[in-house]
Image (cartoon, helix red, strand yellow):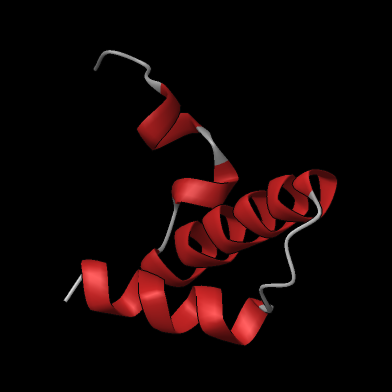
Length: 51
């Protein structure tokens, strides 16, 4: 089996972990840019995109 990021990274092991990692990284990037978005808004947006 070929080892890829998707099957070797613990953050991709479940949909919940993947969502948490993406929301946290986007939130951190947004804060650096000075955005006032909240994690709750990001979670809702993520669920809309991936539903």
